[in-house]
Length: 156
Image (cartoon, rainbow, N blue to C red; front, side, top):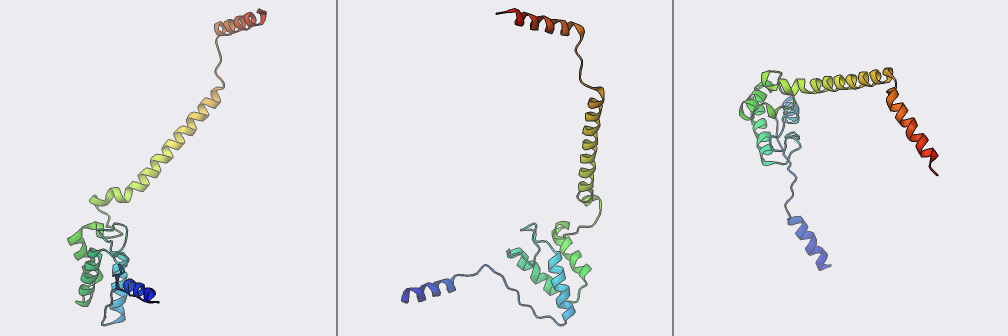
């Protein structure tokens, strides 16, 4: 029994990795804005995790800063502009369409179009080969093949 109690105490002393942010908001609208913002902002350390789900220290700092900016009465646009100015477009899950992000937006469409082009090209080549029919041998090759077959047939 003493061993079980000791083990339970040790388990309770181990720090948890889970981060719980308890925030007080002036209005329910501010809380909803905060939650929406932290779902839309990407953790630059975790790369494909939003700051709401990330346990990284930077994500905790970004959540704290987002909370402070919401409490200061800044609009969602002002808050995202602040984060982009500080961390670049990578902090947004939906970066704006501009020259710097053109390949990001157009890349999937270009890859799909290139794959479709290659597929059509392969199909057309196969049709061309099927329409030409099987390759025919010239008469000299046929005569030599017949001679070889006859020679093999004559040997005992």
